[in-house]
Structures are given as C-alpha cells and as structure tokens.
Amino acid sequence: MSRSAPQVDAFGGGGFRLSGEWRPGSVLILDDVAQDWDLASQTGLSVQSLAAVLQAGPGTCELLVLGMGATNSLPPRAVREAFLQAGIGLEFLDTPAAARLYNLLTSEGRRVAAALIAI
Image (cartoon, rainbow, N blue to C red):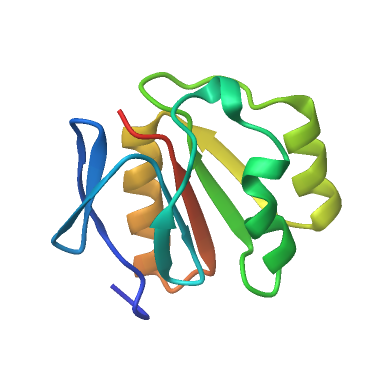
C-alpha cells in the first residue's frame, strides 16, 4: 500500500482486522489513522457522525468510502448534501465492498477516508 494507510485485512464478527490488528466495532479511517467510530447501524448516520471528515476538508480527504453495513442503502439527504457542499466525494456501499474499494484507492495513493459500519 502507498503511504502509511491501514489496510482492511478482514471484517465480520462485529469488527475489523486493520493491518493485522483486530478492532472491535465500527471504524473511521481519516488521514491514514484508524479510530473507533461510535456508530452501530445505518440509523445513527448523520452529518454529526461524520463531522471529523467534513472538518478535515478536501485537502485531507478527496473521497469518503462509506460502508453502510451488511446491505447498502442511501445515506440521509443531509449527509449527501453536506459532502457535496464540502467538496468531498461520497461513495456508499455495503461494508465488504467499501473495504475492498478503500484498499484499492489507498494502494493508488489517493487521499481517501473510510467510515465502515461493523458487520
């Protein structure tokens, strides 16, 4: 992988293995740093839950890969509009597909963040 971005090695069982280290729960990866993300399901998704990405801005993050859990669904309109207004791309998929896309984009050296709901 390019840079020092953590790689999503595995997911399931309520967490993720990132670069060989198990992390229970949902995870937010921003500026190549993984942190716990206090979101257990799509129902809690809001502009506030993604405030760190929006505050970082497009200079730090050109795209957020959003893993919506076991199944993909449309994020709330307020979230989509906030990312559009901030100039940050938003790609939402089920968590397995989001993890694969995040790994691919970081391997290309892209400035990408990931917000992944655990499954």
